[in-house]
Length: 162
Image (cartoon, rainbow, N blue to C red; front, side, top):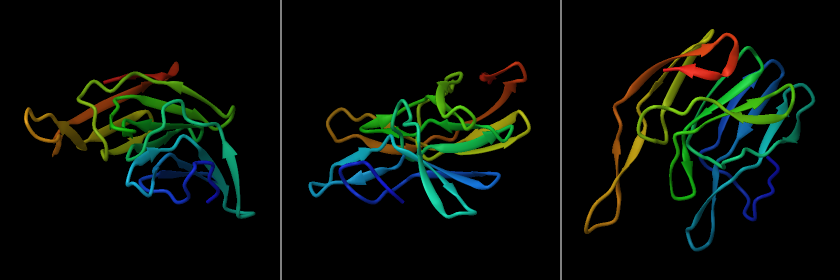
């Protein structure tokens, strides 16, 4: 995969297929000093001609997010990790216009590594890992056993009723 980040390679990206294309989003790279850098660059891979095409950068670089598609057009990235913490954002990529927008925020603690399943305009978003703050120690991580049911508005793909 091509890359623009200062480091090559990619961990914790997400990918999803729509028609003859695979869309690859985010992830992170690791520097020599072990610093992790979330990456904003994304790619469309055409499975017929085996070519990568750079697509619009995501507004907030994330890795370890969950991904689902709607109407063979919109790709939703749910939450994930941004540089040094979790986010509860829903970033939506429009494959027809190569643009990003925000959907309704996730009404639960921000997590990374969650799972999502979407059928028609209904979705279930479950689990993930949240940050546990500790007073006298480094932060730690714990499972977040939360499942949400959501419905995308038929009139506005950015509105999700949770």
